[in-house]
Length: 113
Length: 114
Image (cartoon, rainbow over all chains, first blue to last red; front, top):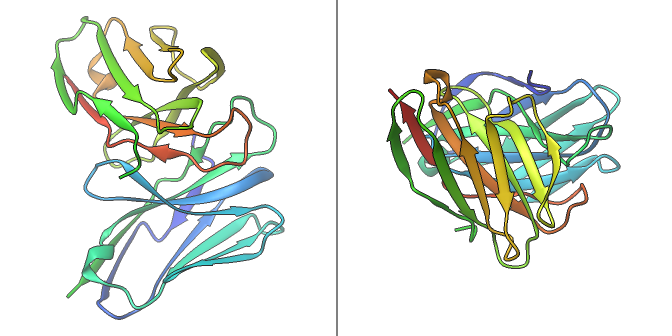
């Protein structure tokens, strides 16, 4: 079963707008990672935020983590058509073996030119 | 490009057959994980290999098996293929066997079982 639940499942915005995706999870984590996937191809690593961090930035990406609420958000500012993709959060649970990542169902982002 | 390469990119097999998928990890990475992604779903962890040994396994039956070689490349073998095995199979490499590091994914192998 998936640990992460992402919201919304689908998001459609205009170029230049901001896109916000949310992720909730169930157990304590070491870190949370966000990935992008274009058209069923491989996953591209976007950003990793550790459990003792609250916010992280990378270019137009801003990730927040609230461990008390077991939730994270990914903000993409000034979106572009090329940002159209599926976005997944993945948690590294604290009490698991083998270093597996547990993925959510993903948010499908569509950015219209 | 992550430096993680998978082969083949696409594959069609018949139910009951066996398949081997291959993955070359990124230079400097010694850990390889395999994931199965069904259409419209997030990836599901199959297993991880670290220093040529299985380091953890998800909820997959024994007919899913793997290997890691001294150069850290890896194979995923699936025996007695079932229709539900049709999916995108993703390989991810990371720097150590410990947790807390980024995993970098290949482009995947699209397996279709007919």
